[in-house]
Amino acid sequence: MDPIAEARRKWEQHGWADVAEGMAAVTSVMRAQQIMQARVDEVLRPFDLTFARYELLMLLHFSSRGSMPIKKASERLQVHPTSVTNSVDRLEAAGLVLRLPHPTDGRATLVEVSGLGRETALKATEALNREVFAQPGLTPRRVTTLVNVLEDLRRGAGDFA
Image (cartoon, rainbow, N blue to C red; front, side):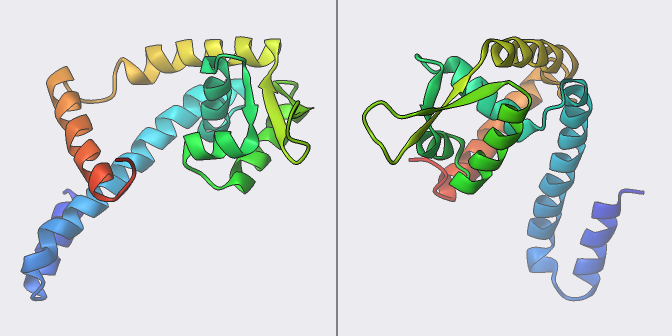
């Protein structure tokens, strides 16, 4: 039995039929996120990375200088600066990034990916590509549909212009 379908049925029975499909959609997305998160966590565990730390490493890896201010990283990752600072703390302790003074802004701190950080990020990416991204659990056509639907949802929520 699908517990979300059962919840939808219960919603309808209790007089909430007009929002039952929306409840099922939200609950389904939340559950799908849990499933995907578990798969990603399993792949990243041997690298001692969370997805948030992995994203930061890749952001730095892709940047032209391999470094950026913490505030800019926060904006790019769409998370609070405190979250980025926490990730930097853990990555720095592991030798994967360095904190550097900003060359022109004495109030800002740069975070820079280290050689070990690049190596770790690339190995983690190879594992994610092979074990998660190449096999997301849907056919390629349905993956495209899902990405398009979620893009509409994100745009409608103001996630980007």
